[in-house]
Image (tube, rainbow, N blue to C red; front, side, top):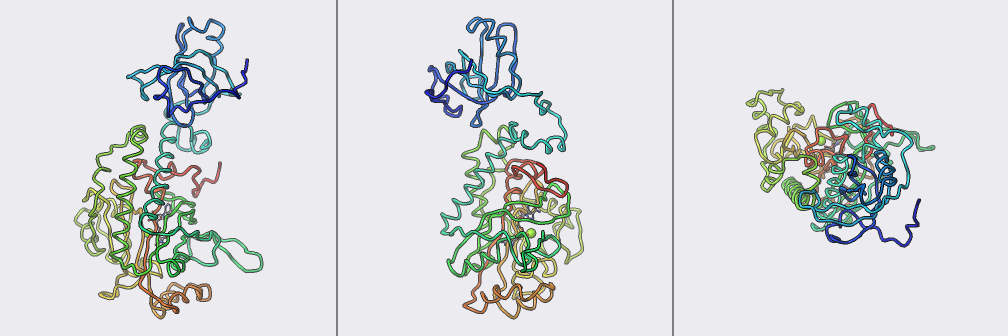
Length: 439
Ligand code: 4AD
Ligand code: MG
């Protein structure tokens, strides 16, 4: 039954429109199937797209019709047929089937076959769930976001530098470290952020960024937290807080515009209302922590002055604006050791959190860095961090210290916002969370 496919040039479903009227060979998987006595509809997906195939009993004969109509969901197949323009079809074409050649028949019923499986059921089968339409669309948007982050930084003269994954010390607090024994060198940790290494690289190259996986042993089970997530982290010499904010604004506008230009179909599959995304234009509102505190109170989400903002406060504040809000100058006590104190008011640090609209919360955290050696040593001591582990970092202040700064953008939260997904777990191929490491 199987033909030798060697001589056949298979066509991608993404390019089918250019083949209207011609005979083509396709290969992929049975996505959905409907059959009547006379006609069989198989939606074929090949990874690049989905197309409806139409098989008429009259054309292919009883025996073939019966065999092909019995192909279960997710059978892999080759299809030969003629591309017919069909204005009512999604991609503008359908396939009139001449022949279907099964490659592999599933050995059991495909488990993902209802519209209302529970999240746990789907996460347990993430390796198969990836084939579903919305999950497929999310990863395609993620790919564009990933690519366009690189494109933006390159356009702005930033050099990509790889940060290490194994690190000797904490960057973002000691409570979320994944530790391990590192031969006879003591403890090592999975990186929480490449920032400290980017500070070193910025003094060598001026403008740099890293973009890789980062790890936090977060005990929080929220829709915003993963234990492994990807972060894009630019760092630039001679940048002050205002430059950091302008860079963050430029990056988000660039990425959203490119997704809107390239991923309309995927956003439609996700039923994402694109009107709020069209509004992502500069300038973004910039408000101080002190102003944010007052805004939250007015919006019915008061909190003690000096505390960090929680998710309810972030949501209440972001609701007042139609674009991302940049909240700057948080109290020193709630932020990391490396942030520079505000010379105008030492109760605050020169930092910024960017809060996405529509309830996703903080997608970017950044700051101007403490460039004064004595001040930095004091902060390290206050945070009870081991001084020895940061000797190399102090060197950056000993040898030609300059103002500098940067930020970290969380890829999954950004994709969740752009795709309008409720939970970050759907925005990474294989999510790692407090209660999940499988598959
Ligand atoms: O605000 P964070 O902790 O900042 C840093 O790590 C800095 N060292 C970055 C820098 O300045 N180079 O994290 C930055 C971003 C957050 O705004 C959020 O988008 C994301 O990383 N993030 C997480 N995403 C998913 N799950 C988690 N557990 C996350 N923790 C942070
Ligand atoms: Mg943060």
